[in-house]
Length: 303
Image (cartoon, rainbow, N blue to C red; front, side, top):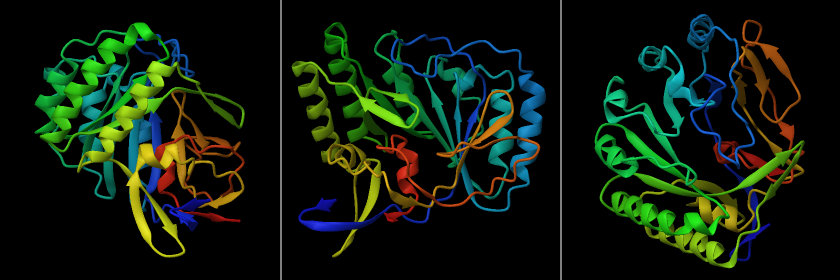
């Protein structure tokens, strides 16, 4: 693997412990491309939420948390939980990954904190009134970014172009960031990315090029034989730098599932939240692609 004719010797760096919390299993949307396939469960989310908070407060290392679903904002104690998370001193970032359907007034109830980051996912299959307007209002209060999903449906193309342009203008005038997302599917250890229609592929390439021009963009770190540098995530992906099968990865990540079980990221290990100590070890990557861009931050070297 090379960058500008220089061999890449490592990727990522010293990342924080990373925890994903599936706050609920259900969602208002039923996107055709969603491989999670949201559903209703009989979990007592209020009781489980209290247990999870207790366990998180016992963690000694610095960590970040991603609140996911389903749709996390549907948790019955969503605002209260975030306000409690903010008070955990060694919790450095609270990232809310949301379809962003809830109104501005809902989000504005969250305690103001530099720890909070709202990742608003743009889903072209569903109209989301005032999507950009709400982001514009919240960008001055919290850190924000958009996971801009692009489907293979030409019927979505016109509106997607309009929304992207609005988001791009917002990013030029604020610290908002945009990440164009190519649809992919996962089966076992295999991840495959969709082949797009010619017109849609051209749009994606254009989006990635425009994001490269922004001062504020999400990046991934690579180290070559000559230097260490940060490159935009779209560029990282376009160069297939996430094809890391066989590399040693210091992955330090967990997924708290909707039912209280905890999955050890990239491993076939599960424990109940009550018995999990959030400690793990490095692995040799078994996957063709590392499709979770959060995990690109963990240091990776050729095994």
